[in-house]
Image 1 (tube, rainbow, N blue to C red):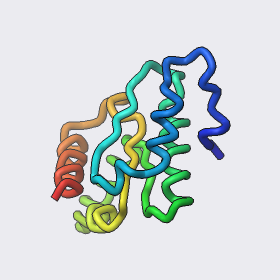
Image 2 (cartoon, rainbow, N blue to C red; image 1 turned 120 degrees about the vertical axis):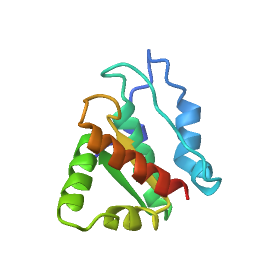
Image 3 (tube, rainbow, N blue to C red; image 1 turned 60 degrees about the vertical axis):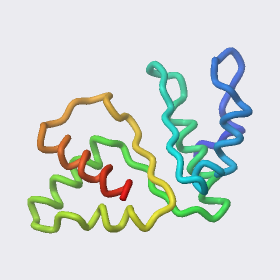
Amino acid sequence: AKDIDDFDFTGTPVNESLIRDLAGGAFVADQRNVVLVGGTGTGKSHLAIAIARALIRNGARGRFFNVVDLVNRLETETRAGRQGRIADHLTRLDFVVFDELGYLPFAQAGGQLLSHLVSKLYE
């Protein structure tokens, strides 16, 4: 399992104190977003998982998704005539992590489903 203490900050531009602050969860309480940006292999997924694990250990309810997997689930849900169930579940959580956003393309319909989900999470 990935934790913040397992991440080697040495020689990276990653701000360790900021990551540890994020793991404290104030941004969740303030209903703020966090976006981790960087090249392939820079540790974004590791840090997102580590922050999410810290938040959950502190009592927050959340979910981690690879975006392509999430879009596939949204498409399956729609084909089954059960659209909205994933969104309903996720709106009850304190946070949601979308990993690999923009890494792989998906069909326009999938993009629309993801956009609709994000809109629901903001309501």
